[in-house]
Length: 187
Image (tube, rainbow, N blue to C red; front, side, top):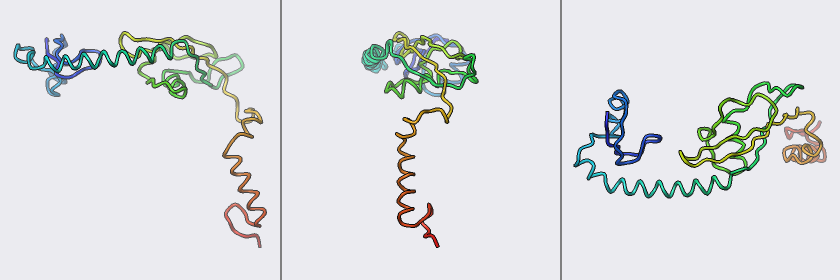
């Protein structure tokens, strides 16, 4: 069924596009939600200005996403995961973990934008594509490394822990004042 879009629809088109969709999609979603209408001359003329504005916004967004793709192209992120001695992960590293690692590095990437054919199941380095828009992509390198058990994180990590420092300071202050952790005095 041919319809005229009244709103932008991801992976379908922008305002003013005439699209061919399945009858069920048109009857059950696009028409009842007011997202599309019949492609008459009057409707096309009425949406001409909205289409011009939507095209301008789309080009601005594409330019911003291209700049972002240039920034993230070739960067490397590390994802720590539990693995056995042979390097096989106990679980897997998927789109969610990769998007979280990119976000932690300050790049606004969603799980849906990460293109991963299948989850990573071994300690490895993998090149992963990130699709920011249908024609804007970037490749990032993902290093999957062994997660250190809590007892092996190293003394540097323990010394730098603000939580531990606060706990030690509180314990020292409590001993000097003759109190325990709850603030009760020793009898």
